[in-house]
Image (cartoon, rainbow, N blue to C red; front, side):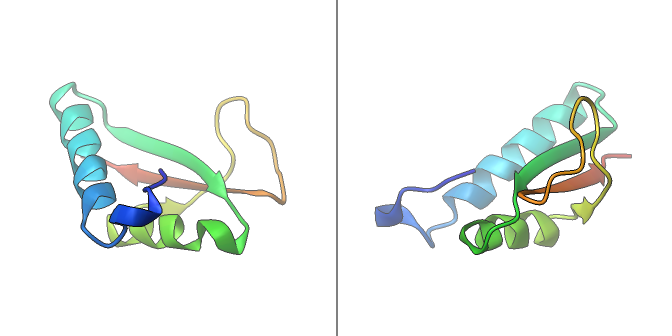
Length: 77
């Protein structure tokens, strides 16, 4: 998730993430997993996900170990 620099800090990313989580839950999805970058540039995104209940996890799906990626997951049950 990336927010335009001119509107950062206004809660848009948090609201978009909350909407995605709510929509997934309504659809009966029980787990959301994501991949984000490991570089410092992505630190704000990793913090956003962690604050919203996402925890580090192993690569999933067709992902493999990658030093440039972080994997996170959250249960919706």
